[in-house]
Structures are given as C-alpha cells and as structure tokens.
Length: 241
Image: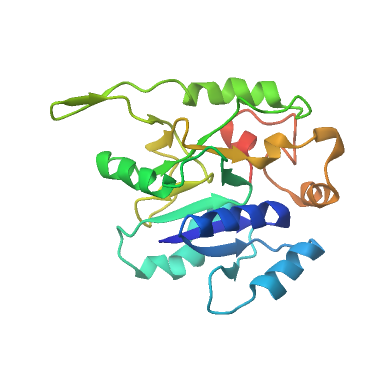
C-alpha cells in the first residue's frame, strides 16, 4: 500500500515517520514542500534521491498539506489515474505511531474502513496523557483532544456486541488511511483509541528551547501553532502542518 509523508524542512521528524511507515510494510512517497533546511535538502537529495527503491521523493512547491489533493498535484497526477477505491495512507511528517501502538495498525485502520462504509478515512488517535510540562500548550491540547478520546458506544454486529477501538471524529492530515482518491474532506472519519495511538512530535518539544531545525521551520511556517502560537482556535491549528 502506498503512503505519503508531507514534509517541509523538519528532517528529524520526517526520518522517524518514514522509518515507521517502512517498518509497517508500506511503500513511502515523501512529498516535499520546498524544504530549505540544509540537512533536509541533503537527506532528500543524497540519501533518498530519485532511485527506484522506496522511499521516493516528489517535490511539490506549495505551502499547505491539503495541496496534496489539488488538481494537478501529486495525488491527482498519480492516484487520479488509479482505481477510485484504492486505499492509501497520508500523514504529516510530525506524526508517528506511539511506541505502544500494535504493529498491526494498518490492518486495524483497514478493518475500521471495512466496517464503516460511510467513513472517508480512519486515523490513529493522538496520545496526550504523556505530554511534558515544558510544552507551552500542553493543557490546551489535552482539553481539546479529550473529546476525541472518550469511549465509543458499543457496536452490534450480528449477534455480537463489542467495544470498538475507535470514535467518530474528524481527521486532518495526521496519520490516516483513506478509502480512495477524492477531494479532501475532514470527515466523516474515525480515530482509533488506545492502544492504537500516534504521537504528534511537536507536542513533546521544549517550547522555550526549540532545536535550530525547528526554529528555522517556524520562521517559514504559514500555518499551525508554530506560526501564530496565540492564534489557534481549533484542532487544525493545534495539529499544524
């Protein structure tokens, strides 16, 4: 199954994300949004390169993750010519499966799509119970994400009733499996519950002492809490590209 990692500059995050997807048995395409951080450019050019092996790189000089779905963009140019119901994975480079997440998480996401035909995608829920105090927005993130972490109503399938490992909730460009190529929509979508968790890596940073790589990225960012830390009002800005 194909997976797409959207990145810009943050090579340390991207390396972790790409490796996690490869470990899960996915083919990886890195969609680079004009990275200019020197280490990122070197990694993309010299260590990944244009070769036939996975991962591969597509350079897409836009500035928002959802540009991946624009007419003429990478998905339109490739998946747009493939079966409409072909599934694939998309994630920002700053989201990785948690260490406690079972290795079969792609199978779980596929199963959730099988059992929920109206869902356009199924994504890993975001862990927040272990966020460090040095992350400036910890309390705000935990309050926001709490609504997506409540237990789901039991499912009844035939004669069986069981507790699903998921809740209905919109999913932006954090780690998710899509039912097929279409115009981007937040939902209807499903997020998994523990232990099928992902970690949103910026939430673990020391806000007052960001690494040089992230300071460089923040200076160029046009979306998310990196750009306007006091301006976010919803989950999309909290998660950020």
